[in-house]
Image (cartoon, rainbow, N blue to C red; front, side, top):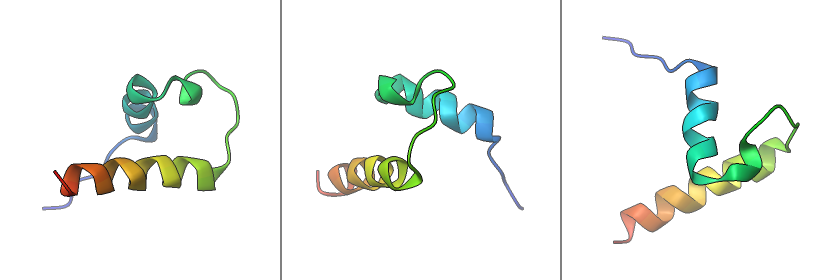
Length: 46
């Protein structure tokens, strides 16, 4: 079974944890990936 996530839903979910990604401002993709990987790293090391 393939599952996908709508980009709008992903952006909204990320915005809940990091307000810098709210709104329609443009952010660096590296900054977004770093934020996501840092969060994943923290969760896996608990």
